[in-house]
Image (cartoon, rainbow, N blue to C red; front, top):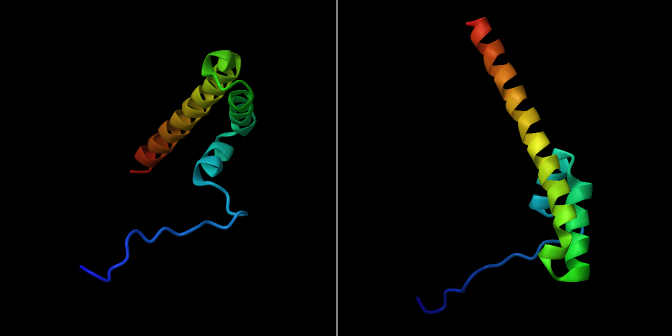
Length: 82
């Protein structure tokens, strides 16, 4: 296999948004996620960022509950049509 290149890593343009950031933005929890990131950058200790972590956790839990309810409604509508 001589002559074959190693990993072909592609560099993302700086203006391309991270897929994780895109996903979190869709949840409505981006502000609390960024608060966790800022706290971690400042303190370098997750134990000092528990208030921010708990706020983000609660936001994500609420989003997951809303999403589950929406999926359940869609399933019920689909079943009603059959």
